[in-house]
Image 1 (cartoon, one colour):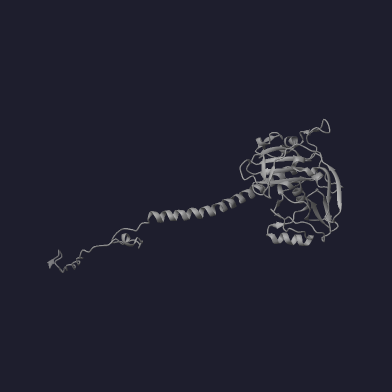
Image 2 (cartoon, helix red, strand yellow):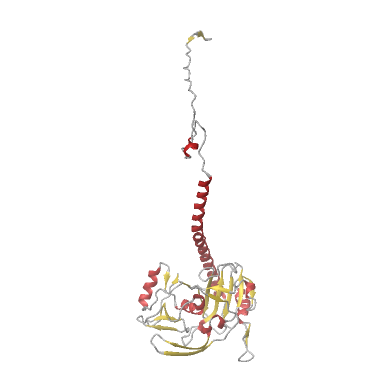
Length: 359
């Protein structure tokens, strides 16, 4: 006891002595069972993974990545292509609407009946018409299509290969000739039809798309023969990323058709890869079947079906009469003959093929 400066006494008590721990041999559990028990505050250490465990983990991650990445990349590409496709369709539709007329561009000459066609129709259509209402970076004639990013071979929607054609008739041979076929009623039909052949052209847009052009300078608003060929003014085969892959219809490659010269209609159908059924159905069942395929599927309208006929070799569609979703004034339903180009109308009980398109 001692006194403080104030004079009062204070008691001081010694704290208890800390009990001395006996030294003991500590065992490194990690070195014994090679399992991690967590952080040991006394030992201040963690367990580690072995090299074999790390390699096994990396292998599993690699396998999972190899399985999932292609699907993930494919989905990203699909969304990108869909966005580009819609944007291109909007720009082309606006440009075509600004053109006063779609026929009459360029010259067509033929020295003899056997001479090949020498013309500037498609190229003039782009240079003197389309380029005035659409931003275009480069224009190429039929002999220099590759300079505008047009590929020589295209993978069709059906999985085949289509070699890029330099003329309209080369693109679709049903634009010229006499068509003889057997109808679904068993009768034989013959329709002579001749469309002026023209050379192709191509151009690159300011957004980087490569577009191949097939042009008909004599397109009409109406035809009495019910053939859909004269209705086509221009047909565009576009490639959203130029020479880059996969160069496949339904992915980076698609088509747009322009029908009617004075009141033009631009259509860009996206057909599904296969017919909805291997058989034929009446019109009402065809509508129901497309609705049942998926929420985005429907029958094409008559102009979309004609566009599918113009691009039949890109689609890979088989011959036959295909239902459309368009109704004629008399209540009959339009169909498109993919073998000949005939656009007819029939009662709903008629049996036709069904190829649905995406909305």
